[in-house]
Amino acid sequence: MERKSLDDIANCCLSSNRDRFEHELHRLRGYQFKRLLIVGSRAEIEAQRYHSRIAPKAVLATLGAFEVRYDLPVVFCSSPEEAATAIERWAVYYSREVIKLAHALSKSLSQHSKV
Image (cartoon, rainbow, N blue to C red; front, side):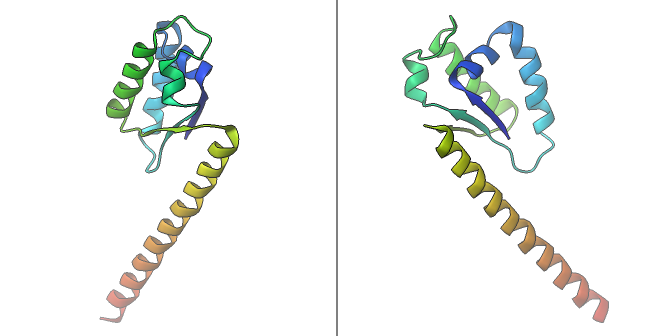
């Protein structure tokens, strides 16, 4: 999970910071569940409500490229509180899925050992 403010994400799209950020995104490829969580909205990017000279179209194009290149869903949350709630919810859902998988594997193993 990578969380960024509007200013952070705009700066990560600049050539000077982009290589470092892409290295971080490349490392996320090994994770089963990953997100790029942006605290702010797409409309705020379009209105250039961040402190950077990079054009909104460049930021949005970069985000689109990152989604495809790194198989990384980009999620916008309007506030830090909404972002925290989303992270909490994902953690619960992901944990449930892992537990279900573990139970299914355990059941399968015990059935095979009885044969």
